[in-house]
Image (cartoon, one colour):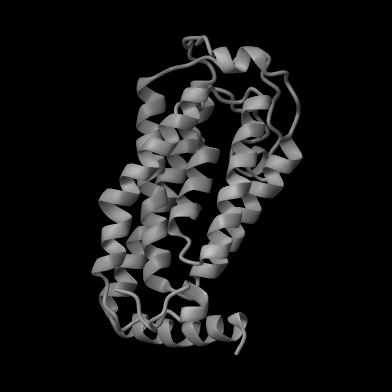
Length: 235
């Protein structure tokens, strides 16, 4: 059997087990509602943030980096990482629910931090063109003050920590580093924005996501070829 065959096998068996328990369905529905609510809050608040005066930080690293427009490769890498991660985890409903919670909690903390810490965008910023978010979420307006901490970094790091397949995890890690470097060259974020994202996501992973995965029942199938495990089940 190929990896794709194992994925489809896991998909059929895991969703069959998951949907037998009504509580699972309710939990997933609540998780999706929570995710939508947090995402919508960004749409409302970040547009208002653009009119609020913030603080301009001194960033020695950005001062020595020239400005380049990496909008397209940033867009491609980010959505590739997100797409691959969620398609992969779609065969594992427990992990899918947990990554949505993981991401939503990270976003909520980010929204609170943006509210508490108002920053002006870095000098020599080049607007990031995201064909999806700019048109569907921010009504064509460029958002520049959603700084501490980086949403791009959150998306990449959550996917990295949630990915159980070692090969894909390494690819996501490598591409994430490239993406974060490009963010700095485009002067979209301060260095502290990326460091802050790493600290917060790492802590949420250690405190919540990792433990939650370990506590889940062994009744869910995780094929060894997919999860890089020697056993058929993951605790």
